[in-house]
Image (cartoon, rainbow, N blue to C red; front, side, top):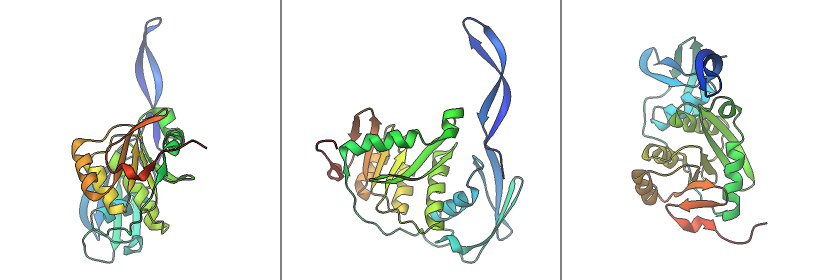
Length: 237
């Protein structure tokens, strides 16, 4: 429905050629005015892909809906999105939770798979990539210029497809902040892996919420910031 990239005229410098004009591919960011039951809700700026999942995930995170079928209709028109929902705002729905462990050797294997999944990131370098995985491999990945949007898209996918998050591994291309941890709490995630770091508040909230957070998963190393018992060491397969 919407293009995810655009070509724009830029100027590029190199020592041998100096400054020259260049047509470059850029990730598209688009803002949508969202209306719920004909009342203005807010503006959402995002990569215009998987918009239904984004809206469902976002509204569920905010407690506006509890499940995807609470939305009766979604209407898209250029930069306007109108939704009809059939319930009043409620508290956030907390997903059923399980427990999960992961062998240490699988952590970086999953991260490599995660980082290689996004063609948009390879083309533009302009999106965050978020994935859900099992021990066996990736299940679903979503991209967006905003980290929060990418997580919302994942949650929207899970709500639409009745996928439980509690026994899944969350993978992130970017840092794990407090806001991201709060979203993982709502999803029921217990194990999160990032290529980057975790913030101090993100670590504190994850510790309190019982979420294992791994950071700097690169090469064959990673840091464990909270609840290390979910990572099992041993010989590689």
